[in-house]
Length: 195
Image 1 (cartoon, helix red, strand yellow):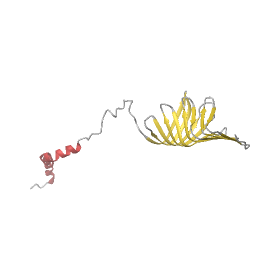
Image 2 (cartoon, one colour):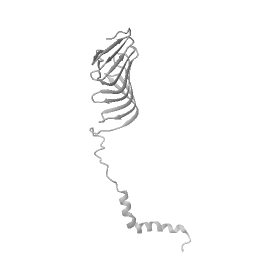
Image 3 (cartoon, rainbow, N blue to C red):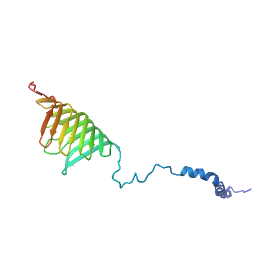
Image 4 (cartoon, rainbow, N blue to C red):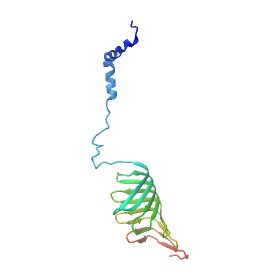
């Protein structure tokens, strides 16, 4: 019998080598990679890949000819049907561009299409122009950045210091500052007159 247990240490590699035919096949099966990775689908050099995300507290800043025009904040953002559409929740936007006054817009939801530069605000849309003391309420607003056109295809209420306008539709051209109300239009002035 060996008096020093340290001398038994050489037996460990001998036992592993002698028993390897028994444990090596199950271990190699366990350590074999199992599919699901295709190097072509994650190639960072390809442009046609879609990437999806969900983010909290996002800010989108839109520029026109090098000048800041829109600052759009949202509590949550995510990709839409494609990675070129950004869906948003609890939207708070400020229009800062052009010769016009700063305008604040809030809504419950929104969608921004990057390619078309098209902003859609949905549910509880409120537009506030503090200098002219005007407020507008609607449930759906489309803003086309390339043409500077605001379209509200549903019911709209516009309140000013001396008037209230209710209409079935609104088209607003930001370049010419022209309003075009459609559908049934009802105007109430502060002196109580109705049209």
